[in-house]
View 1: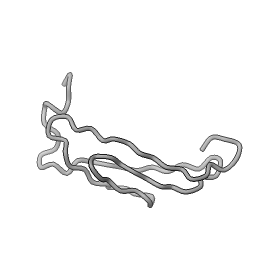
View 2: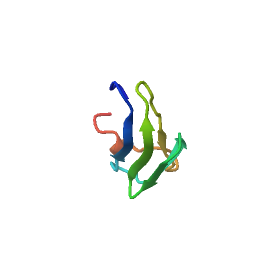
View 3: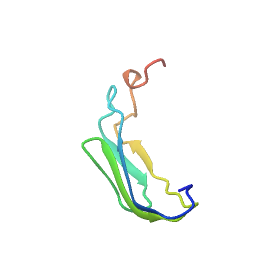
View 4: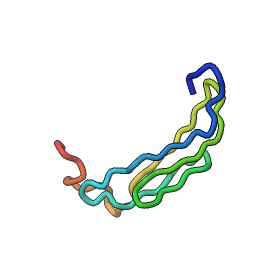
Length: 74
């Protein structure tokens, strides 16, 4: 949050890529309140004080990782 006060009811909904074989995801670092359903990362962080931040790390768990068709342009 970069505002002068507390940000209340902070929610993140982030569609994850589905290019090529990217169709399976896991959260590898979760500050709490996050889940993945139907290729959408959803987090409910509640209130964040000014200057506060949350970091979520997501990776594919497809065997062998992303294939070439998941990486347009190389």
